[in-house]
Length: 338
Ligand SMILES: Cc1cc2nc3c(=O)[nH]c(=O)nc-3n(C[C@H](O)[C@H](O)[C@H](O)COP(=O)(O)OP(=O)(O)OC[C@H]3O[C@@H](n4cnc5c(N)ncnc54)[C@H](O)[C@@H]3O)c2cc1C
Ligand code: SF4
Image (spheres, rainbow, N blue to C red):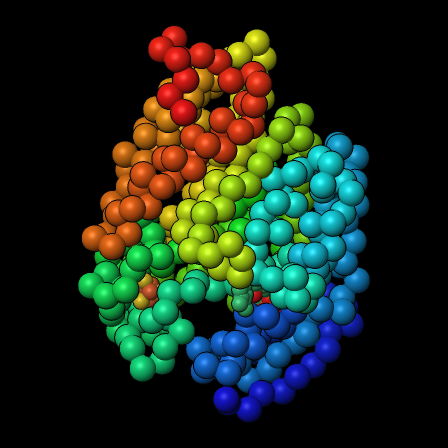
């Protein structure tokens, strides 16, 4: 491991000034991802600025009926918060589907959103990887890619974003509050993470030194009817093969509004806008849910060993919406095709 200096941050503005002014500096929060990367040699900062003690550890109700979540709120605390459990089940379920109890106790909101891909080549210094070492190549396309992207990938990178929390926040249209040297700015969660394109080394749209200080959840009248469904190789302690965050607004068997985001399928949380558009104003039937999912997944470009994710995503979207519709699920006119 390369030697580095450690500093504890006592206020956000000074932390931003320190990291912005030093190219080799980076933030440390819970350390559950970054410390692994230090040990592996994937990250080689010369200065760690520890932001985990900053007073950004509250969840507070906002005037418009939403919530503001501080960047250092631990994943466990957020999942257990009564307003989250009651008002945003999709968020609590996504958090509890991630990692393990011990890791969730350490992991923070900001760190979770900015965790890096679990592509095995990215973590292995003996192999090329465009994300870790731009221009070196992407062995995943021809190699191990079973857990990698089927949507929005590029010839340069087919990695997936691993956060469950980010997928729920994408469905809830969260806004990320960021502090930089010029002050605060707000970034839609949908615009925080990038697709890989020609620059897979850039995971996000943040500039060096920008500090995530919080996440705002706007009020959403139907957030109470929301859920997160994660499919993985084993029941805990595993990243998503496919996950679905969804919220459903039904009236008299008609879909008034719907939010769907997918995890485990792309370099960023994938907002399924084509499926949403196909569903709005139509019947809440299993056939409609399945057709909408198929519309979204028509864009998929799977590789040989991850083609299974396409039907898996279709079925998981359908099952999640079916579960949310519950007893309001309409008939297909041909009987339910469950
Ligand atoms: C065995 C294992 C299983 C896991 N399973 C899952 C899973 O199923 N689902 C899931 O979602 N996650 C999973 N994780 C990942 C875990 O959730 C993340 O490691 C954790 O959320 C990262 O948060 P942290 O506070 O520890 O971040 P750190 O490791 O401290 O930091 C991560 C990155 O974020 C940056 N950073 C941290 N805070 C800020 C900030 N406020 N502003 C700007 N940059 C910041 C750091 O510089 C670093 O680059 C797993 C991890 C392990 C080790
Ligand atoms: S998929 Fe991305 S992260 Fe994985 S080896 Fe290719 S460039 Fe690296």
